[in-house]
Length: 494
Image (cartoon, rainbow, N blue to C red; front, side):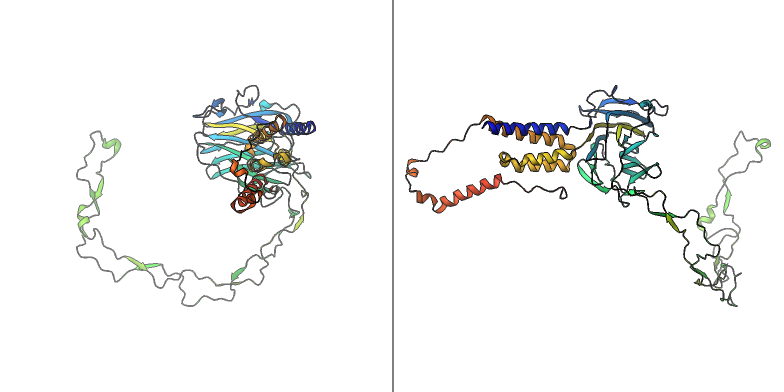
Protein backbone atom coordinates (compact mmCIF):
# COMPACT_ATOMS: atom_id res chain seq x y z
CA UNK A 1 0.00 0.00 0.00
CA UNK A 2 2.85 2.37 0.84
CA UNK A 3 4.45 1.69 -2.56
CA UNK A 4 1.16 2.55 -4.30
CA UNK A 5 0.85 5.79 -2.32
CA UNK A 6 4.42 6.74 -3.22
CA UNK A 7 3.64 6.15 -6.90
CA UNK A 8 0.51 8.27 -6.67
CA UNK A 9 2.38 11.08 -4.96
CA UNK A 10 5.00 10.91 -7.69
CA UNK A 11 2.29 11.23 -10.35
CA UNK A 12 0.79 14.22 -8.55
CA UNK A 13 4.18 15.90 -8.40
CA UNK A 14 4.78 15.26 -12.10
CA UNK A 15 1.40 16.74 -12.99
CA UNK A 16 1.90 19.82 -10.87
CA UNK A 17 5.38 20.35 -12.33
CA UNK A 18 3.98 20.08 -15.86
CA UNK A 19 1.13 22.45 -15.06
CA UNK A 20 3.60 24.90 -13.60
CA UNK A 21 5.70 24.55 -16.76
CA UNK A 22 2.62 25.32 -18.87
CA UNK A 23 1.89 28.61 -17.13
CA UNK A 24 1.20 31.40 -19.62
CA UNK A 25 4.33 33.02 -20.97
CA UNK A 26 2.43 36.28 -20.56
CA UNK A 27 -0.95 37.02 -19.01
CA UNK A 28 -2.25 40.56 -18.57
CA UNK A 29 -5.75 40.69 -17.01
CA UNK A 30 -5.55 44.43 -16.18
CA UNK A 31 -6.92 43.74 -12.71
CA UNK A 32 -4.53 46.44 -11.52
CA UNK A 33 -3.62 49.80 -13.01
CA UNK A 34 -1.29 49.53 -15.99
CA UNK A 35 0.99 52.37 -14.89
CA UNK A 36 4.45 51.13 -14.02
CA UNK A 37 4.00 47.99 -16.11
CA UNK A 38 3.11 49.53 -19.46
CA UNK A 39 4.84 52.49 -21.11
CA UNK A 40 2.85 55.14 -22.96
CA UNK A 41 4.56 56.52 -26.06
CA UNK A 42 5.88 60.06 -25.69
CA UNK A 43 5.79 60.75 -29.42
CA UNK A 44 3.87 63.97 -30.18
CA UNK A 45 1.44 62.33 -32.61
CA UNK A 46 -0.01 60.04 -29.93
CA UNK A 47 -2.38 62.29 -28.00
CA UNK A 48 -4.94 59.64 -27.06
CA UNK A 49 -5.37 59.01 -23.32
CA UNK A 50 -5.30 55.43 -22.03
CA UNK A 51 -7.36 54.66 -18.92
CA UNK A 52 -7.70 51.74 -16.53
CA UNK A 53 -11.49 51.38 -16.58
CA UNK A 54 -14.35 48.95 -16.07
CA UNK A 55 -16.21 47.35 -18.94
CA UNK A 56 -19.64 48.97 -19.33
CA UNK A 57 -22.10 47.18 -17.09
CA UNK A 58 -19.45 44.88 -15.59
CA UNK A 59 -16.92 44.85 -12.77
CA UNK A 60 -14.09 43.60 -15.00
CA UNK A 61 -11.30 46.10 -15.71
CA UNK A 62 -9.39 46.63 -18.95
CA UNK A 63 -7.23 49.06 -20.91
CA UNK A 64 -9.53 51.72 -22.36
CA UNK A 65 -9.27 53.94 -25.43
CA UNK A 66 -10.96 56.98 -23.89
CA UNK A 67 -11.12 59.61 -26.67
CA UNK A 68 -12.35 59.82 -30.26
CA UNK A 69 -10.27 60.65 -33.32
CA UNK A 70 -6.90 60.12 -31.68
CA UNK A 71 -3.74 58.10 -32.18
CA UNK A 72 -2.74 55.79 -29.33
CA UNK A 73 0.46 53.93 -28.52
CA UNK A 74 1.39 51.88 -25.46
CA UNK A 75 3.86 49.03 -24.96
CA UNK A 76 4.82 46.39 -22.41
CA UNK A 77 8.28 44.82 -22.54
CA UNK A 78 8.53 41.15 -21.59
CA UNK A 79 10.90 39.85 -18.94
CA UNK A 80 12.19 37.26 -21.41
CA UNK A 81 11.67 37.12 -25.20
CA UNK A 82 9.19 34.50 -26.39
CA UNK A 83 10.50 32.26 -29.14
CA UNK A 84 8.09 31.23 -31.89
CA UNK A 85 10.30 28.63 -33.56
CA UNK A 86 9.64 25.62 -31.34
CA UNK A 87 6.31 24.07 -30.43
CA UNK A 88 2.87 25.61 -30.40
CA UNK A 89 2.38 29.23 -29.42
CA UNK A 90 -0.99 30.82 -28.69
CA UNK A 91 -1.50 34.57 -29.07
CA UNK A 92 -4.79 35.71 -27.60
CA UNK A 93 -6.56 38.78 -26.33
CA UNK A 94 -10.03 40.06 -25.60
CA UNK A 95 -11.43 43.32 -26.93
CA UNK A 96 -14.80 45.01 -26.59
CA UNK A 97 -15.91 47.71 -29.03
CA UNK A 98 -18.28 49.38 -26.62
CA UNK A 99 -19.23 52.15 -29.06
CA UNK A 100 -18.79 50.10 -32.21
CA UNK A 101 -15.97 50.55 -34.71
CA UNK A 102 -16.63 52.57 -37.86
CA UNK A 103 -13.06 53.51 -38.67
CA UNK A 104 -10.07 52.37 -36.67
CA UNK A 105 -7.99 49.48 -35.43
CA UNK A 106 -8.14 47.29 -32.34
CA UNK A 107 -5.15 45.04 -32.99
CA UNK A 108 -1.98 44.16 -31.10
CA UNK A 109 1.59 44.26 -32.36
CA UNK A 110 3.99 41.61 -31.10
CA UNK A 111 7.28 43.50 -31.11
CA UNK A 112 10.59 41.90 -32.01
CA UNK A 113 13.82 42.71 -30.09
CA UNK A 114 14.99 46.26 -30.76
CA UNK A 115 18.45 47.69 -31.21
CA UNK A 116 20.53 48.48 -28.16
CA UNK A 117 19.60 51.78 -26.56
CA UNK A 118 16.01 51.72 -27.81
CA UNK A 119 13.59 53.42 -25.43
CA UNK A 120 10.03 52.12 -25.04
CA UNK A 121 8.84 55.74 -24.87
CA UNK A 122 9.80 56.00 -28.56
CA UNK A 123 7.29 53.30 -29.57
CA UNK A 124 5.45 54.31 -32.74
CA UNK A 125 4.18 53.08 -36.10
CA UNK A 126 7.75 52.50 -37.33
CA UNK A 127 8.73 50.20 -34.45
CA UNK A 128 9.54 46.80 -36.03
CA UNK A 129 7.22 43.96 -35.08
CA UNK A 130 7.03 40.21 -35.72
CA UNK A 131 3.25 39.76 -35.88
CA UNK A 132 0.30 42.13 -36.02
CA UNK A 133 -3.01 40.54 -35.12
CA UNK A 134 -6.54 41.78 -34.47
CA UNK A 135 -9.59 43.70 -35.75
CA UNK A 136 -9.42 46.57 -38.24
CA UNK A 137 -12.37 48.38 -39.85
CA UNK A 138 -12.66 51.45 -42.06
CA UNK A 139 -14.65 51.93 -45.25
CA UNK A 140 -14.46 48.73 -47.28
CA UNK A 141 -11.87 47.26 -44.89
CA UNK A 142 -13.34 44.81 -42.40
CA UNK A 143 -10.91 42.14 -41.31
CA UNK A 144 -9.14 40.43 -38.45
CA UNK A 145 -5.56 41.17 -39.48
CA UNK A 146 -2.81 38.61 -39.28
CA UNK A 147 0.44 40.03 -40.65
CA UNK A 148 3.85 38.39 -40.33
CA UNK A 149 7.07 40.35 -40.85
CA UNK A 150 9.65 37.87 -42.07
CA UNK A 151 13.31 38.43 -42.84
CA UNK A 152 14.59 37.37 -46.25
CA UNK A 153 17.86 35.53 -45.53
CA UNK A 154 19.24 36.47 -48.95
CA UNK A 155 18.66 40.22 -48.77
CA UNK A 156 18.32 40.81 -45.03
CA UNK A 157 15.15 42.82 -45.70
CA UNK A 158 11.92 42.36 -43.75
CA UNK A 159 8.76 41.78 -45.77
CA UNK A 160 5.14 42.06 -44.58
CA UNK A 161 3.14 38.94 -45.38
CA UNK A 162 -0.65 39.37 -45.07
CA UNK A 163 -3.06 36.51 -44.43
CA UNK A 164 -5.38 36.18 -47.43
CA UNK A 165 -9.14 36.22 -46.90
CA UNK A 166 -9.05 36.84 -43.13
CA UNK A 167 -12.25 36.64 -41.07
CA UNK A 168 -14.41 39.73 -40.60
CA UNK A 169 -14.90 41.66 -37.36
CA UNK A 170 -18.10 40.95 -35.36
CA UNK A 171 -20.56 43.85 -35.66
CA UNK A 172 -21.93 43.88 -32.12
CA UNK A 173 -20.64 45.77 -29.08
CA UNK A 174 -19.88 42.72 -26.94
CA UNK A 175 -16.55 41.33 -25.78
CA UNK A 176 -14.83 38.96 -28.22
CA UNK A 177 -11.76 36.78 -27.83
CA UNK A 178 -9.30 36.70 -30.74
CA UNK A 179 -6.88 33.78 -30.88
CA UNK A 180 -4.01 32.93 -33.23
CA UNK A 181 -2.50 29.47 -32.81
CA UNK A 182 0.92 28.98 -34.41
CA UNK A 183 1.73 25.29 -34.85
CA UNK A 184 5.17 23.70 -35.41
CA UNK A 185 3.93 22.15 -38.69
CA UNK A 186 3.66 25.70 -40.20
CA UNK A 187 -0.08 25.87 -39.61
CA UNK A 188 -1.77 28.95 -38.21
CA UNK A 189 -5.36 28.94 -36.98
CA UNK A 190 -7.45 32.04 -36.34
CA UNK A 191 -10.26 31.72 -33.83
CA UNK A 192 -12.95 34.17 -32.73
CA UNK A 193 -14.55 33.28 -29.40
CA UNK A 194 -13.01 29.81 -29.60
CA UNK A 195 -14.52 29.07 -33.03
CA UNK A 196 -12.10 28.48 -35.87
CA UNK A 197 -12.60 31.05 -38.62
CA UNK A 198 -9.47 30.52 -40.72
CA UNK A 199 -6.77 27.90 -41.14
CA UNK A 200 -3.67 28.59 -43.21
CA UNK A 201 -0.13 27.42 -43.89
CA UNK A 202 2.71 29.90 -43.56
CA UNK A 203 4.52 28.46 -46.57
CA UNK A 204 1.52 28.37 -48.91
CA UNK A 205 1.33 31.04 -51.61
CA UNK A 206 -2.45 30.55 -51.52
CA UNK A 207 -2.62 31.72 -47.90
CA UNK A 208 -0.23 34.68 -47.68
CA UNK A 209 0.38 37.71 -49.87
CA UNK A 210 3.17 37.97 -50.82
CA UNK A 211 4.25 34.37 -50.32
CA UNK A 212 6.94 33.79 -47.68
CA UNK A 213 9.01 31.85 -50.20
CA UNK A 214 9.68 34.06 -53.25
CA UNK A 215 9.23 32.65 -56.75
CA UNK A 216 12.25 30.88 -58.23
CA UNK A 217 12.25 33.13 -61.29
CA UNK A 218 11.35 36.74 -62.02
CA UNK A 219 10.88 38.76 -65.22
CA UNK A 220 14.21 40.06 -66.50
CA UNK A 221 14.16 43.82 -65.76
CA UNK A 222 16.69 44.41 -68.55
CA UNK A 223 14.76 42.54 -71.24
CA UNK A 224 13.19 44.84 -73.85
CA UNK A 225 10.38 44.18 -76.33
CA UNK A 226 11.67 43.98 -79.96
CA UNK A 227 10.57 46.85 -82.17
CA UNK A 228 8.97 44.49 -84.70
CA UNK A 229 6.96 42.60 -82.08
CA UNK A 230 3.28 42.79 -83.10
CA UNK A 231 0.77 42.33 -80.23
CA UNK A 232 -2.33 43.07 -82.35
CA UNK A 233 -4.53 39.96 -82.60
CA UNK A 234 -6.80 41.68 -85.19
CA UNK A 235 -6.02 44.28 -87.86
CA UNK A 236 -8.13 46.19 -90.44
CA UNK A 237 -8.44 44.24 -93.69
CA UNK A 238 -5.96 46.00 -96.04
CA UNK A 239 -7.85 44.75 -99.10
CA UNK A 240 -11.25 46.09 -98.04
CA UNK A 241 -12.71 49.04 -100.02
CA UNK A 242 -15.42 51.48 -98.99
CA UNK A 243 -18.63 50.92 -100.98
CA UNK A 244 -19.47 53.63 -103.57
CA UNK A 245 -22.83 54.41 -101.95
CA UNK A 246 -21.35 54.92 -98.50
CA UNK A 247 -21.94 58.58 -97.60
CA UNK A 248 -19.82 59.50 -94.61
CA UNK A 249 -21.19 63.07 -94.65
CA UNK A 250 -24.84 62.11 -94.25
CA UNK A 251 -26.16 63.61 -90.97
CA UNK A 252 -27.47 61.39 -88.20
CA UNK A 253 -30.80 63.35 -88.07
CA UNK A 254 -32.86 65.24 -90.68
CA UNK A 255 -35.96 67.48 -90.61
CA UNK A 256 -39.24 65.56 -90.68
CA UNK A 257 -40.84 67.06 -93.79
CA UNK A 258 -44.08 65.19 -93.19
CA UNK A 259 -44.73 66.80 -89.82
CA UNK A 260 -47.58 69.41 -89.58
CA UNK A 261 -48.22 72.16 -87.05
CA UNK A 262 -50.76 71.11 -84.39
CA UNK A 263 -54.10 72.93 -84.35
CA UNK A 264 -54.35 75.65 -81.71
CA UNK A 265 -50.64 76.43 -81.79
CA UNK A 266 -50.17 80.03 -80.50
CA UNK A 267 -47.56 81.47 -82.88
CA UNK A 268 -47.78 84.98 -81.44
CA UNK A 269 -47.55 84.03 -77.79
CA UNK A 270 -44.08 83.82 -76.15
CA UNK A 271 -43.25 80.81 -73.98
CA UNK A 272 -42.32 83.12 -71.06
CA UNK A 273 -43.72 86.48 -69.93
CA UNK A 274 -42.83 89.07 -67.31
CA UNK A 275 -44.18 88.21 -63.86
CA UNK A 276 -47.13 90.65 -63.49
CA UNK A 277 -46.94 90.43 -59.70
CA UNK A 278 -43.29 91.37 -59.50
CA UNK A 279 -42.45 94.90 -58.32
CA UNK A 280 -39.30 96.89 -58.51
CA UNK A 281 -37.53 96.92 -55.09
CA UNK A 282 -37.63 100.27 -53.31
CA UNK A 283 -33.86 100.34 -52.85
CA UNK A 284 -33.18 99.63 -56.54
CA UNK A 285 -30.89 102.30 -58.02
CA UNK A 286 -30.99 102.34 -61.84
CA UNK A 287 -27.68 104.16 -62.05
CA UNK A 288 -25.86 101.64 -59.85
CA UNK A 289 -27.92 98.49 -60.43
CA UNK A 290 -28.91 99.05 -64.06
CA UNK A 291 -32.39 99.05 -65.56
CA UNK A 292 -34.71 96.85 -63.54
CA UNK A 293 -36.41 93.98 -65.36
CA UNK A 294 -39.23 91.87 -64.00
CA UNK A 295 -38.41 88.12 -63.62
CA UNK A 296 -39.88 85.74 -66.20
CA UNK A 297 -42.55 83.09 -65.60
CA UNK A 298 -44.08 80.42 -67.85
CA UNK A 299 -46.83 81.83 -70.06
CA UNK A 300 -50.14 80.50 -68.61
CA UNK A 301 -51.74 80.58 -72.11
CA UNK A 302 -49.21 78.00 -73.30
CA UNK A 303 -50.26 75.51 -70.68
CA UNK A 304 -53.68 75.11 -72.34
CA UNK A 305 -52.40 75.20 -75.94
CA UNK A 306 -50.26 72.54 -77.71
CA UNK A 307 -47.44 75.09 -77.87
CA UNK A 308 -46.33 78.73 -78.20
CA UNK A 309 -43.93 80.71 -80.32
CA UNK A 310 -42.59 79.96 -83.76
CA UNK A 311 -43.39 76.37 -84.78
CA UNK A 312 -40.59 74.32 -86.36
CA UNK A 313 -40.67 70.84 -87.84
CA UNK A 314 -39.08 68.26 -85.52
CA UNK A 315 -35.98 66.22 -86.41
CA UNK A 316 -36.02 62.50 -87.18
CA UNK A 317 -33.36 59.78 -87.66
CA UNK A 318 -31.75 59.84 -91.09
CA UNK A 319 -32.27 56.48 -92.83
CA UNK A 320 -29.25 57.19 -95.06
CA UNK A 321 -26.88 57.71 -92.16
CA UNK A 322 -24.01 55.20 -91.99
CA UNK A 323 -21.27 57.14 -90.23
CA UNK A 324 -17.58 56.92 -90.93
CA UNK A 325 -16.53 53.84 -92.85
CA UNK A 326 -14.03 51.42 -91.30
CA UNK A 327 -12.44 48.39 -92.87
CA UNK A 328 -13.53 45.10 -91.26
CA UNK A 329 -11.10 43.42 -88.86
CA UNK A 330 -9.26 40.23 -89.77
CA UNK A 331 -6.75 37.96 -88.00
CA UNK A 332 -3.28 39.49 -87.92
CA UNK A 333 -0.87 37.19 -89.79
CA UNK A 334 2.06 38.80 -87.90
CA UNK A 335 0.52 38.41 -84.43
CA UNK A 336 3.05 37.10 -81.89
CA UNK A 337 1.03 37.40 -78.70
CA UNK A 338 1.43 39.69 -75.72
CA UNK A 339 5.11 40.24 -75.11
CA UNK A 340 6.57 39.32 -71.75
CA UNK A 341 10.15 39.62 -70.59
CA UNK A 342 12.03 36.39 -70.24
CA UNK A 343 12.30 34.77 -66.81
CA UNK A 344 15.61 34.75 -64.95
CA UNK A 345 16.61 33.22 -61.60
CA UNK A 346 15.32 35.28 -58.70
CA UNK A 347 18.30 36.56 -56.70
CA UNK A 348 16.02 36.85 -53.64
CA UNK A 349 14.77 33.25 -53.81
CA UNK A 350 15.40 30.98 -50.85
CA UNK A 351 14.11 27.65 -49.62
CA UNK A 352 12.45 27.31 -46.25
CA UNK A 353 11.16 24.41 -44.15
CA UNK A 354 9.51 26.66 -41.59
CA UNK A 355 9.33 30.41 -40.95
CA UNK A 356 12.30 31.99 -39.22
CA UNK A 357 10.24 33.90 -36.69
CA UNK A 358 11.83 36.70 -34.71
CA UNK A 359 11.18 36.39 -30.97
CA UNK A 360 8.54 38.49 -29.25
CA UNK A 361 10.24 40.93 -26.88
CA UNK A 362 7.23 43.19 -26.18
CA UNK A 363 3.56 43.64 -26.92
CA UNK A 364 2.29 46.98 -28.14
CA UNK A 365 -0.98 48.62 -29.12
CA UNK A 366 -0.46 51.31 -31.74
CA UNK A 367 -3.73 52.40 -33.35
CA UNK A 368 -5.58 55.30 -34.90
CA UNK A 369 -9.33 55.30 -34.35
CA UNK A 370 -12.37 57.55 -34.77
CA UNK A 371 -14.23 55.73 -31.97
CA UNK A 372 -13.65 55.69 -28.24
CA UNK A 373 -14.71 52.94 -25.84
CA UNK A 374 -12.34 50.25 -27.16
CA UNK A 375 -11.45 48.04 -24.18
CA UNK A 376 -8.52 45.61 -24.29
CA UNK A 377 -8.33 42.81 -21.72
CA UNK A 378 -6.88 39.37 -20.92
CA UNK A 379 -3.84 39.48 -23.18
CA UNK A 380 -2.28 36.02 -23.28
CA UNK A 381 0.78 34.36 -24.78
CA UNK A 382 0.92 30.66 -23.98
CA UNK A 383 2.25 27.28 -25.05
CA UNK A 384 -0.45 24.63 -24.72
CA UNK A 385 1.12 21.77 -26.65
CA UNK A 386 2.86 19.96 -23.78
CA UNK A 387 0.10 20.06 -21.22
CA UNK A 388 -2.38 18.16 -23.40
CA UNK A 389 0.04 15.27 -23.95
CA UNK A 390 0.58 14.98 -20.19
CA UNK A 391 -3.15 15.15 -19.49
CA UNK A 392 -3.79 12.33 -21.96
CA UNK A 393 -1.17 10.23 -20.14
CA UNK A 394 -2.78 11.05 -16.79
CA UNK A 395 -6.14 9.94 -18.22
CA UNK A 396 -4.60 6.53 -19.01
CA UNK A 397 -3.69 5.87 -15.35
CA UNK A 398 -5.62 2.67 -14.42
CA UNK A 399 -7.18 3.91 -11.19
CA UNK A 400 -8.75 6.82 -13.13
CA UNK A 401 -10.57 4.45 -15.50
CA UNK A 402 -14.05 5.24 -14.12
CA UNK A 403 -13.45 8.93 -14.87
CA UNK A 404 -11.61 8.56 -18.18
CA UNK A 405 -14.62 9.45 -20.33
CA UNK A 406 -15.13 12.79 -18.61
CA UNK A 407 -11.40 13.59 -18.56
CA UNK A 408 -10.97 12.91 -22.29
CA UNK A 409 -14.02 15.07 -23.13
CA UNK A 410 -12.64 17.96 -21.10
CA UNK A 411 -9.16 17.67 -22.66
CA UNK A 412 -10.53 17.60 -26.20
CA UNK A 413 -12.61 20.67 -25.48
CA UNK A 414 -9.44 22.39 -24.30
CA UNK A 415 -7.61 21.46 -27.51
CA UNK A 416 -10.40 23.02 -29.58
CA UNK A 417 -10.64 26.16 -27.45
CA UNK A 418 -7.22 27.19 -26.07
CA UNK A 419 -8.77 30.17 -24.32
CA UNK A 420 -10.28 27.84 -21.70
CA UNK A 421 -7.11 25.82 -21.09
CA UNK A 422 -6.65 27.11 -17.54
CA UNK A 423 -10.18 25.93 -16.72
CA UNK A 424 -9.38 22.55 -18.31
CA UNK A 425 -6.33 22.16 -16.07
CA UNK A 426 -8.35 22.98 -12.99
CA UNK A 427 -11.08 20.48 -13.94
CA UNK A 428 -8.63 17.62 -14.51
CA UNK A 429 -6.66 18.41 -11.35
CA UNK A 430 -9.87 18.41 -9.25
CA UNK A 431 -10.86 15.00 -10.61
CA UNK A 432 -7.34 13.66 -10.11
CA UNK A 433 -6.90 14.96 -6.58
CA UNK A 434 -10.38 13.79 -5.53
CA UNK A 435 -9.72 10.25 -6.68
CA UNK A 436 -6.22 10.36 -5.17
CA UNK A 437 -7.51 11.30 -1.74
CA UNK A 438 -10.09 8.54 -1.84
CA UNK A 439 -7.36 6.01 -2.59
CA UNK A 440 -4.80 7.35 -0.12
CA UNK A 441 -7.08 7.96 2.82
CA UNK A 442 -9.94 5.63 2.11
CA UNK A 443 -13.64 6.31 1.83
CA UNK A 444 -16.92 4.95 3.06
CA UNK A 445 -17.50 1.56 1.49
CA UNK A 446 -20.98 0.85 0.17
CA UNK A 447 -23.09 -1.23 2.53
CA UNK A 448 -23.71 -4.82 1.47
CA UNK A 449 -27.45 -5.28 0.96
CA UNK A 450 -29.06 -7.85 3.29
CA UNK A 451 -31.10 -10.38 1.41
CA UNK A 452 -34.49 -11.45 2.82
CA UNK A 453 -34.44 -14.77 4.59
CA UNK A 454 -36.73 -16.39 2.04
CA UNK A 455 -34.51 -15.20 -0.81
CA UNK A 456 -31.39 -16.39 0.97
CA UNK A 457 -32.78 -19.91 1.19
CA UNK A 458 -33.35 -20.20 -2.56
CA UNK A 459 -31.19 -22.80 -4.31
CA UNK A 460 -28.17 -21.35 -6.08
CA UNK A 461 -29.43 -22.77 -9.36
CA UNK A 462 -32.36 -20.34 -9.38
CA UNK A 463 -29.99 -17.38 -9.15
CA UNK A 464 -28.77 -18.12 -12.69
CA UNK A 465 -32.19 -18.74 -14.23
CA UNK A 466 -34.66 -16.44 -16.00
CA UNK A 467 -34.78 -12.74 -15.33
CA UNK A 468 -32.28 -12.95 -12.50
CA UNK A 469 -29.53 -14.07 -14.83
CA UNK A 470 -30.39 -11.43 -17.39
CA UNK A 471 -30.45 -8.71 -14.75
CA UNK A 472 -27.02 -9.62 -13.41
CA UNK A 473 -25.65 -9.65 -16.93
CA UNK A 474 -27.14 -6.21 -17.73
CA UNK A 475 -25.63 -4.73 -14.58
CA UNK A 476 -22.20 -6.06 -15.51
CA UNK A 477 -22.51 -4.68 -19.04
CA UNK A 478 -23.58 -1.29 -17.67
CA UNK A 479 -20.60 -1.33 -15.34
CA UNK A 480 -18.29 -2.06 -18.27
CA UNK A 481 -19.76 0.77 -20.31
CA UNK A 482 -19.19 3.23 -17.47
CA UNK A 483 -15.53 2.28 -17.10
CA UNK A 484 -14.70 1.86 -20.80
CA UNK A 485 -12.59 4.75 -22.08
CA UNK A 486 -13.51 6.52 -25.30
CA UNK A 487 -11.14 6.39 -28.24
CA UNK A 488 -8.62 9.20 -27.94
CA UNK A 489 -8.71 11.38 -31.02
CA UNK A 490 -5.44 11.93 -32.79
CA UNK A 491 -4.08 15.43 -33.40
CA UNK A 492 -4.97 15.12 -37.08
CA UNK A 493 -8.59 14.38 -36.25
CA UNK A 494 -8.87 17.47 -34.03
